[in-house]
Image (cartoon, rainbow, N blue to C red; front, top):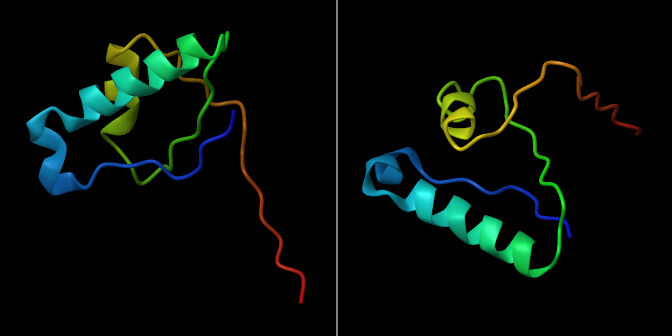
Length: 71
């Protein structure tokens, strides 16, 4: 299963939407018998790592994404 670009706009962060959305994704993963979730967080998104840590995620600093445009 693959999901791309999921976010909550800043003006909605204090309304509990982030938790509800994350809980729904966990529910779907468990229903689909997924054994692991893996995602990336942009460096500019300073609050996200703490949110994910509070939900039990382990944050590593191993991978670096590289893009190369070919014209």
